[in-house]
Image 1: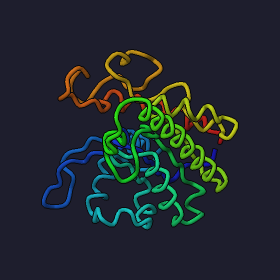
Image 2: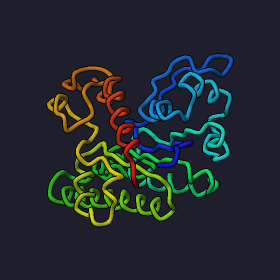
Image 3: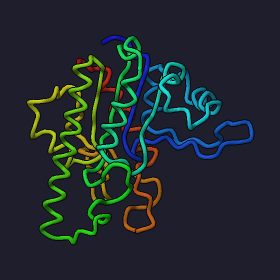
Image 4: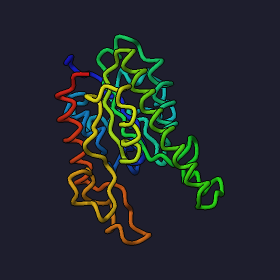
Length: 250
């Protein structure tokens, strides 16, 4: 495989980097690097996480969506908390279309696909937002959303493949993964993590089929718990994606 010089990642809050507070000099004073930034360090794309954060602190955050910064930073995380798979699909295409082809030849795109019930530009559950009663109608709507998510995954994968852009995909939700597998004739399965998914509730934290082994806060039994992956889970996800990218032959 050709050397990966640039890394673009997208997803939901399971992918977002959290750099916390910024001091008077524009430097980030807290950092919760997620799997994308840790992966970029392991791949040698960024010199170090502190070095990347220092560079990032000198850029107007509002201008980060300008692809010119991709050439300088070499790693860009376009994930957003509560993101739908529609937003991931659309924002990835919109961002990469303005990147020079020579840069894209050495770029790896890694997507951690979100839950199926979300819809673009809204954080939350579509069924709640639409006020649909739980029941047969809601079940039909959710099934439609699951298949729509699968087609976003397949569509983006094929766009990247046809453009000769290296790409790898894994899933927060085993539901979306399973729907994608129903269309496996349309994907290169070497580009997908299909044996494991990320999110696990408290009954599955020790299950090897899931990457998540801990939470940011709590046990998963209380409504106040933060069920996002903890630091151990982030490290596991980083290592698992890194290992598979090294064997990438897409």
